[in-house]
Structures are given as structure tokens and as C-alpha cells.
Amino acid sequence: MKSIILQPLGLVRRDLLFDLKSYLTKVIDVDVYVASKSIEIPRVAFNPVRGQYNSTYILNHLKVSSSHLPYDKVIGIADIDAYVEGLNFVFGEAELGGRAGIVYLGRLKPEFYGGEEDYELLLIRTLKEILHELGHTFGLLHCANRRCVMTFSNSILDTDYKEANFCKECSRRLNVRGVLVLNPID
Image 1 (spheres, rainbow, N blue to C red):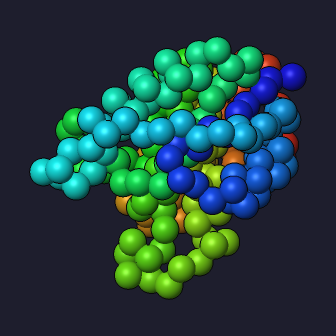
Image 2 (image 1 turned 90 degrees about the vertical axis):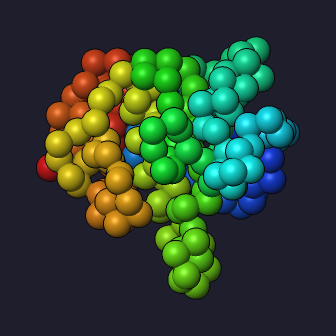
């Protein structure tokens, strides 16, 4: 069975990490762990002109910092706003077919858009983005099925629209890679 560790970067709510662990095991048949210690976010990753963090720099830092961990996949969780070159922002980033991915909570929070704090909404949005980045680490590309978690999210509306699960085609591809999706969507 595949193993995944949720690795906080900087300050991240522990209850969120453990709730994500619980939800992940209901969607995919993997062992999920939560790291006991946080990894610091490198200060040099912050771009003061943009007021955001460079995601690629943080992802590379996560790969190096977690290389000794005995898990198949490492998913970093950071409570910041991030970007990659050429995009205004990202909800996450991952190595295609690699070991590491990262999800950023900054723009997943309803209050970022002027809404009220909503823990359940943050939880489901974060779960979707973790599954999306995990899919990339297992070699999945973006999916044309807008309900599939592997569809590209250009905005928070796209994230809210898609399901917190893989479509049958993406599920089949994951199964070939040794990951069983529980109850894939149509």
C-alpha cells in the first residue's frame, strides 16, 4: 500500500491536518500520516513586489527537506499565498510523476474573497487540491471532465465545482500505478 505524509510548512492548524488525513483515506486506499514537526518556509521564497511566495522555490525546499522521510509521497501544506512564474497565483504545485507536492491555503479560505471564515469549506477545498496534486505526483495530467478533481482550477469557482474524487478514467490510471480510488465519480 502507498504511503503519504502531510507535511506542514510554517504554521498550519493541526486539526485541519488530521481532518484531511481522515478524508483522504475515504477517497483513496493509501496510508496517510501527519508530520509531527513543521518545516520552515524559506524567507527568500517571498517576493515583496508581489506580496506572494514563489511556489517552485518552496516545492524544491520541501523535496530536499523531506528526502529522508520513508513515505512514497510528501504533500506540503502552507498557509500562504503563492505563485509560479507566468501565473497570478496557484492553489498548489507538484512534480509530475515525482514524490512531492504542495497546497497553499491562502486562496482556499473564504475570507480571502471577503466571505466569512468557514472551516468545512476550507477543508473540502484543501482536500480537492491535495488530491489534485497527488494525482500529478502519480503522473496524471489535467482532466477534461470538469467534475473530476484533476480538472485545472483557474479560479476558486472551478475548485468549488469539481468533486473531491477522481473520475473513472483517472481512477483507472491511478489503479495501474497501484492506487485504488474508492467510489470514483462518473
